[in-house]
Length: 429
Image (cartoon, rainbow, N blue to C red; front, side, top):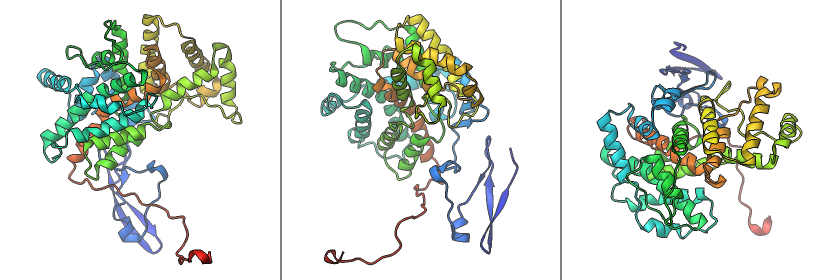
């Protein structure tokens, strides 16, 4: 890491000395805060891809080396040894919990997993075929109306309680949205089950018979939740922080995060993988699909391959690949689309075109396969992502509330519209 303390920048006849922030890990960041006052210029960074918008101690990514850490813990260790709920505690609080701390946290989350009965009436207002993400976004935002007496977020306890409520209730809301969509009656969460199993029961159990849940199903989903819990300043997390910078309540902030995650370029990637597999259709068509993907003029892309941040490999994909095969083997799934996926993975990993360009299967490729194997419908894939990412979103919101330097987000722009002009009466135009 560079030990650079400051840089000089010249604009016209002015030179300004800018301080450089040194992170614990990663690249130094030039502080441009005084640039407009000193030079009269702003900076232009399309998509904020070269701009650090905040200081954060939660997640570190090194895309070149394939490193992902939560609070300093490598994702490989957490995936092997931890659980999603313990990871949620870690993200929120900064350290792994003691046995007693975790027992209290788990108790609090379990206690708050129930929904106000009015939610079951609220969900009836959505069309039967409404997208689950649309329902989730609306219902998470509406939580602010149920807890409007607990909006003193200068109070650390009210902040903690809001975080607990979101982590506890978002899975229950997600299951309610799914059941509304398929016409099933509401099922209440079972407090004798742990977090992921409780969600699966709330989602899939029917009153007429108990759900026979495979342990590998709960383990696989718990692992996916760990891998999706946070990913630094991505689009949805940045959205949560931007909304949070205004002083908005955490339910509104997380609802905004759900909206951003819904975009197909962000959280919808694993849904796009399944749609691609359906388009390929059968294992007999895999090689022709690979050939089309290599043809720039075909307009066909292999979804779930490569990653914008990870340039060599996605560490999450390395972890989840093994679980994918375990799920398929232990559940004895016989699904032609999953056969297509496995054939496609094999072809891409052997093809020089993909190997040289490092277009490896990423976490979205494998997560879509696991979700399908677990019987989760395609339109619920992004909802699964949102359940996991709620832990990261609320952790960033909590961190932001404790930041004495927090200020309202206000990006600038390069104006490309008309210059000043005079109004012309309608009969003169």
